[in-house]
Length: 403
Image (tube, rainbow, N blue to C red; front, side, top):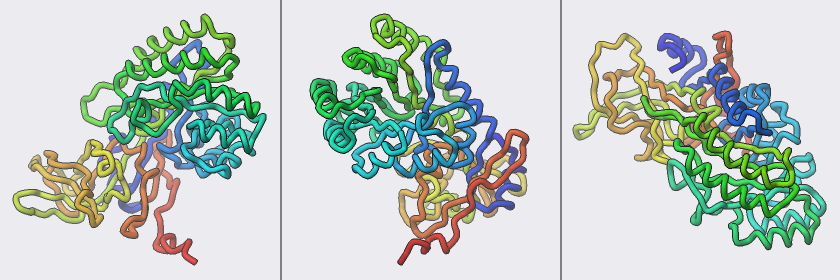
C-alpha cells in the first residue's frame, strides 16, 4: 500500500466507499521505466487507455511523453481531451464499423486493420490513406486464455499465410501502409515469448519495405502476489535490442520507429481500491467477509480468476487474531468473490478492505450492474495531497439516458 491505514480511513470518510485511489509518483515512475526500455533506439511507448481511461491519469501519462493506443472512438475522444495529438494516437480496433474507422481517419489518426476483411473495408472507403495491419505471429502469452491475443486460437490479427493478400489489397486501393503491429497477450512475466513474437513480426516487416513504424505489442506484467519477482526489464531490453539490431542491418528504413504497448505495466501498481466491511458471517464452517466491493466495482477476479492482494484494515486496532476467510462483494451472484480462503486479520463491521494493484482494468471495467453506483476516483498528488478526479455515480445517473 502506498498510503497509511490512517490515510485510508480518512479518504473513505471524505470521499465515500468503495473508492479508487491512485498515486501520481508511481504512475510517473512506471512511465519513465518504459521510456528507457530501449535506450539509443527510436522507441515510442503507447499507453493503452483500455487499462485505465481516467482523464487525469491520461494527462499525467501525456506529460511524461507517452503516446496512446485507442480501441474505440470513445477512447480517442478521452485521449484527445487529455491532450494527445492525433499523430500520437494509434487506433487498433477489432471488428469495427466504417463509422468508427472514419472517426479516426478524419482526425488524422492511423488506423490498424485487424483482418483482410477490415483492410478491404478501409481501402474501399478511404483509398490513398495511411493505415497499418495487425498480424498474428502465431505466438501467444497471458495470465488467462481470455487474454491471449496471439497464436492459432484467437480472433486477432492476420495470419502469416495471408501476407500476399495484404499486399494485393494495399496495392488495389493505393493504401499508404505505414506500419504493422501485433499483440500476443496480457500479463507476461517472462520476456522470452514476447521476444519470440517480435522476431516473427520483424520477419514480416522485411516483406514490407518503407514502413514508418513497427508496433511490437505489449502485455507487460506486474507482480500481483506479495514477493513475486518483477518482470526483468533490463534482460528484456538486451534481448529486444539484439533482435532489433539484426533487423536494422538489412532493413531499408534505418529511422523506423519501434513501438511498445505496456498497458497495465504503467497504471496497475499506482491504483488501490478501498471498500468497507458491511458484514461477517459463518456459513457451514466457512467465514465470509462481506464488503461493498462487488464485481461491478472490480471485475477481474470473477472474469479471469485473477489474484489481488487483499488487506483488512482494522478500525479499532489489530489484536493479532487471524482467520481463514473468503472476501465477497454485494452483488447477487455466487461468483462475486474478491479473495477466496485467505488468512487475514479477523474482520469486523466497519473495517476497511484494501485491494492492491487495482489501477489497471479496475474502474475501466466497472459497471452499474444491480443498479449499483460506480465509485469515485481520487489522486494522491506528488506533494501528498489528495483530490477528487472522478465523482461517484448518483442514482440520477442510472436513469439519465432513458427516454
